[in-house]
Each structure stands twice: as C-alpha cells, then as structure tokens.
Length: 461
View (tube, rainbow, N blue to C red):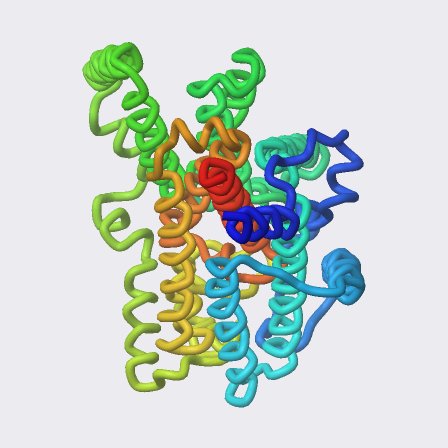
C-alpha cells in the first residue's frame, strides 16, 4: 500500500500542469505563443507573380514572409535547445513522425524537380513550420495555455485580416477582388476570405450554442463571417461551412430535449423560408447565382478542375514519385490549368486540390502519409471527445471545447481542400491555419488525457 502511494505521489510530481493557465492579454498571448502570429500570413499587397514560377523568384514580400517565419522558428529552436529533456505525448509523437517523413519525401523530390531551388526553398519552409509545431506541443505539455483563448485569438486574427481586406478594397480593390466570374471578394494575397470568414462563423456558432461568451459578441462575429463568406462566392467554402454548421447544430441538439426541439423548429422555419424564396425568386435564378452564371456542365466539372485532376493523376500513375515539390506541377501542367482555374495569389501550386497537390509534389507515398496523418489527428480528437463528456467538462472544460472547435475547423479545411491547395502550400494562409489547428488538437488532447489520469490517480488513492 505504501509503495502504491509513493508511485502515485511520484507520478503526480512528474505530471505537467493539469489545468490551463489564465487568459493572457492580447499582446502577451502572441509573445508567449508566437506560432499564432503565423496565422497573419503576413498579408502581401501584390498581384500574382508572372513568368516561370517553377524557377527561383522573389520580391520584398517573400523576404518579409520568410523572415517572419524564420524569427518564430529561431525562437522555437532556442527554447527547445534550452530544455533539459523534451517530452511529447505518445499520440502526438506518432503524428509528428508522419509529418517528418512526409517532409523527407518532399526533400527527396528535389532530385527530380524541374525547379530544384524552388523545391529546396519550400522544403526549408516546411521544416521551419514543423519546428514551430514541435516547440508548441512540448511547451503546452509542460505548461498548457488557456485552450479556448487559442481559438478566440485565431478568430481575432481572422477578424483583423478581414478588416484589412475591406480597407484594401477601398484603397486598392484590384488586390482583393476579382471580376472574372462576377465581382467576388476573394482577398487575393492579403487574406483568404474563403478561409477567415468561415473560421469566424464556426467558432462563434459553437460559442453561441454552448454559451462560452456573450451572445452579442458571438452574433456579431457570425454576421461578419457570413457576410464575408457570401461576398467571396466560393462554392467549396459555402458547402463546407453548411456541412460543419449542421454538425455543430446536431451535436448541440443532443444535449437536451429542449435543444432538440429548438433545432427542429429552426429547420422547419428554414425550410419554410427556403420554399418562399424559391417561389418568389425562382429556382433557376438561385442556381445561376450559386453557380456564378455557369451551366450545369461547369458545376459537374468543378469549373474545369476535374479535367486537370484526371490529367495529373494519369501522369502520377506512370510517374509514381510525382513531379517535384511545388515546382513540378507548374512546369508540367502550367498551360493546362491556366485557362481553366483561378490564379493562385502567389502563383505557386496549381492543382486547386490539396490532395492532388501532395500527389503531384511527391507521389503516391506522400499522399498516403498525408491522409494517414489527417486520419490519425481526427481520430485522436474524436476518440477523446467521445468519452464521458460530463467528466471531461468537469476536469478541463476549456480544453474540451477548444478541441471540439479545432476539430470542426480542421474538418472544414479537409473538406474545402477538395477545391483549394492552400492548406498544403507553405507561405499560404491555409497552411498556417492547418498547422495551428493541429497543434491545438494535439495539445488539448494531451491536457485532457493528463487531467483524466490525474483524476484516476486521486480516485485510486
């Protein structure tokens, strides 16, 4: 009995902090956790780069971006080097290994890339991001942050970026708006409106339903986010947002009978309003607005994307190692997609699909590693949130709600990845957002597991 008590006491001394720290002021939070600064991008006030982008090219904004990331990564390296021991939870180590081996495949693709300098540069940026991820996970295991503040700060970054997009729209509209298929506020290289606005909507809707902040604040963020999402007119973001909002609503409805009745009433009201809108406006006009004036064939082919995807998959069937990280698709398929797909803000990538992008970058093995990594991340978060939620809420409610929010946002990126490759392209906002969501999922999961083990140890005593 005495030996058991001593083992429990020893394990308690080795355990990191159980409860998250208090919320920090705005500036102190970003100084304490600078990985969230990467969510800013930072914004670039430039048009797409012209010329052969599979070869080396840079400008002032590229230097700022690389310097921005390098400073955060250098701080992470210094902090890791100062630690006597580095402890990472087992479930996080497994996922980080997949990310590391995926980076090695990108690195190996330099040997057959048509633009070796470009591929090497982006590999360097990939590993800088990975260092920032590792440092945050190590730090959060030792001293966890207030996890919901992490989500609130990510939402605040999205709001600031959207405000910057609106300011740019007044001063220099050509940077953030396109008129190719109707007037669309895409955000250009300043900020991806199709990402930042749904981020605000999803976090705020979750907070509204679970009463995590004032209703006025949540509703204000929702209205701003919905307005920006509609202004972007991005079908992928619209559909992904609707799917995730439905997931939030049905999850909330399971809380109680009253919540279920409210949801059913809301659905009936929505169907009634939708019927009235169709009868007044006309189904044809609504479809034309959703499809941005295109016909049914443009919707079936995803505005010409599917033809490009088939072509690129066919190439990778005969070249299973891919085309070379980032630079390959620009060289081999530059002319194929230029007339069909929208211009990328930085004019890198070129698949308009995150999964095809990974495939063309380093082949089938890279795609398999990337998909396995995503599945393991989602499975980890899902497995923890499916446990006894009442016990988790009592032990660490901040981590539980933050984990739920991060899973929803990551799911949005996974679905929206069918239309945009930004989540797998370093130096693009989607890539930074996805990395931040991954560290929140891994970190919050670790905090919840620690809390549950601590509680079990107390019960055993």
